[in-house]
Length: 227
Length: 227
DNA sequence: TGTATTTTGTGATTTTTTTCACATCAAACT
DNA sequence: AGTTTGATGTGAAAAAAATCACAAAATACA
Ligand SMILES: NC(=O)c1ccc[n+]([C@@H]2O[C@H](COP(=O)([O-])OP(=O)(O)OC[C@H]3O[C@@H](n4cnc5c(N)ncnc54)[C@H](O)[C@@H]3O)[C@@H](O)[C@H]2O)c1
Ligand SMILES: NC(=O)c1ccc[n+]([C@@H]2O[C@H](COP(=O)([O-])OP(=O)(O)OC[C@H]3O[C@@H](n4cnc5c(N)ncnc54)[C@H](O)[C@@H]3O)[C@@H](O)[C@H]2O)c1
Image (cartoon, rainbow over all chains, first blue to last red; front, top):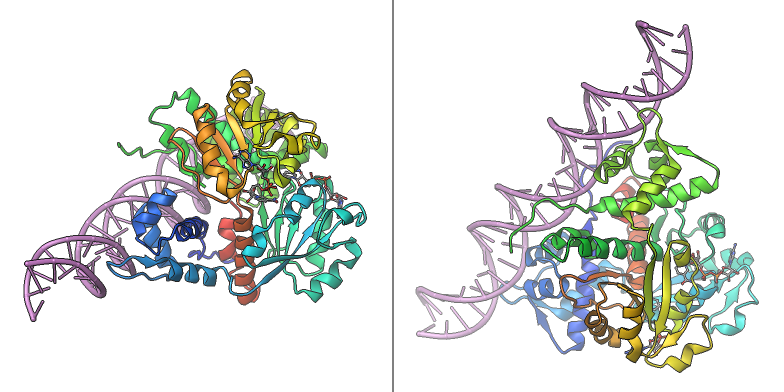
């Protein structure tokens, strides 16, 4: 396959999320305008980086005047397609699935969990406000609500099998909580959230630091741990 | 502050986690030996990268013979300080905290949640096998069990305040589920897990892809999603 | 109106990361 | 034993990302 040399998406995208989190918070605090260095301070990156990232996504500010928070957030909504609503489904209503189904932040961000699914649809039915369907109804619901993205919270052992089914019915993006590497076609995006890895990486860094006795090479460790 | 030019930890560390996940799975399937390209195939990186990453951490294989899975896993345990047990605490026993407290993978990986804490210790007491303490007993327990790492699952609004307390009692690493950027001293590591961001980034990529009509620049989008 | 000041936006430069390429070694085979 | 084969390990080269640095623009103020 021909090698593509210029990649569009880089760490910039990840940092845009950081910036937005800050902006939302600042806005709540009544701030209306920020400068690149405000955001830099808030997020721990450099102000050059902030401006470069904005440049990447064609986000413009006002020379000398900084950025209007509302405008900036508007730009970001655009980037993240937040103007539209996004229907998602949640597969697996165990411990984690149940917690996720009660998470209200999704809705605040225009992401609606329209349905949940479990191999055993009766087990959880009474515990949630959301409908819990059997897997047999997956295609029907996904088609009806034009769902393209799924959250996967089933046991490790079933994760690949369920993924295959999701792909078959037309899901194009998966946030996967099972600690397995899912095999998917090239046109399906998987984002893995692996809690044990997160913990271990913190433990690793903490240990390195303690060993290094809190001295200058803390900087070393930070680099990739910032987000 | 003097600029340090050579960083030790890079994306290599993140990929080491990937490799290990594969190795664990392969081992379960009865495989005993892998080559760099085996791991490459499994994880979606190149075999050069795998070898380079190993090189980074001084992990050695056998020329022509590849790597013994057990040996490799041993090396990784070493890297992650898995030989020792690690006591951790969980703060916030709401929806998410409860799910996390029931997660058995931690123990399998030598990470013990020794105690959980909540501002309201009675609310959850009966719902968990783990002790749920009031925040007042934080220092006592942390000292007793020599805890250095905490999982934070409290509401956004309390996250910073609880973090300050954690830092005060000597916690050096935090896995934070609240969607806020925590302010911590330079010697404290924070790993943020932000579910909404994960979802939105998937939605972003899925949309880009759909727009791009599933064609070659899918590659573009993948780059930073693979880690 | 003109000058000083401040902050953006982006090429140029530097640093970091990835990929390449090949010498080196270990096993397998003749 | 000698030769071929196949994989590692790592400097060198290429690519990507971050940082620098400064022109350009907008505002403030004299
Ligand atoms: N509990 C946690 O805090 C936590 C944290 C991080 C990751 N995880 C991961 O998330 C996943 C779920 O964890 P959990 O603790 O909720 O497990 P769980 O066993 O409580 O729940 C799993 C649910 O999936 C359902 N299920 C099983 N097979 C299915 C299939 N083929 N199709 C549809 N549904 C199916 C089960 O009926 C059950 O309700 C696991 O992979 C786990 O490793 C859990
Ligand atoms: N529920 C989810 O699926 C989910 C997913 C991702 C992120 N999160 C985030 O995780 C955090 C917890 O979410 P949740 O749904 O479990 O919320 P929740 O309200 O169910 O639970 C929060 C718990 O924290 C406790 N608490 C509040 N203030 C405290 C304090 N000062 N000290 C100690 N404990 C305190 C509360 O008593 C409660 O038990 C939130 O920040 C949320 O945004 C939740």
